[in-house]
Figure 1: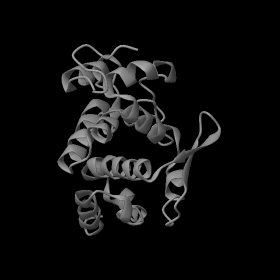
Figure 2: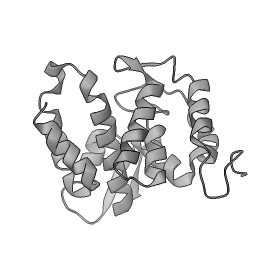
Figure 3: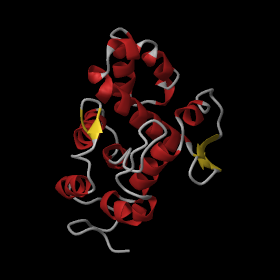
Length: 188
């Protein structure tokens, strides 16, 4: 497989190319939390970058719901296009984006009890996928960024108890993400 134009082997494509791909896939036309999906994806990416996330994690945040999720069921990219997404953002980022969409929040949360072996249930493939600690941390960071990016646009009545769901993720989060979750607890 050849890297995307402008990308070197093992690196992701330039951000403008990723955004152009998302726009062409329909992210601008797709409504999402009182805006459009592309804005949400871009702002989730920015939040992860601001927190100091690795490039692969920030890129996974940019593509985190392109395959749809258990709550946002609209897929703007089908699973047959995973190779193209890998060319744009790299294999690690694409795997994280896929896992974010393919698993349920409860599947991810079941790993937060301090065990040293982690797995999430891949709903489309109907199988469990083992995670290493880094993957679990990365998925928690993406999950929290996704939530916090939308939080200002979510009606207050739908926010009740929201932050408490993310408190168990604190040990797995980047330091800035931890601070953001704790601050959100006082707002929600």
